[in-house]
Length: 177
Image (cartoon, one colour):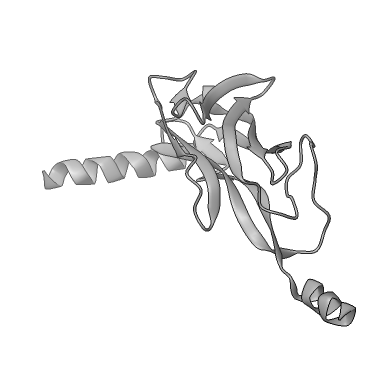
């Protein structure tokens, strides 16, 4: 009977959670980039055989899915909070409010535990920097698990050729009007 149990355990699949932080582009060209988007999510993964994480900070992945997300926070550079959302408060921008739109959802789906998306219209040098996403979640045993990951967004000044191409494109569209 114990051999059947061992076989059952060896075929059991454990799914984990992983934090993902993506950018529509990791380089912003001032005066040319219309928008840039950052999206932070806690996604479910394929089967894993690693041990579960209990009460840990700054992990990027766990062996089992967390139950739910309590908050998502995105910071820039030295800890400036750019946007946040919690299970009690909707996603909102805390800086760059004139050009930044924030949305998100903490509803658990079959593929995701929650996400927050930030989109800047006509980003500037101010949006350059090191971004860190932190997702706080609760595991099966009620322990808090803090996921974190980061990425860098650079800003460049467009070359004269790029500006000339943009100018030609705009003039061409204006002639069609």
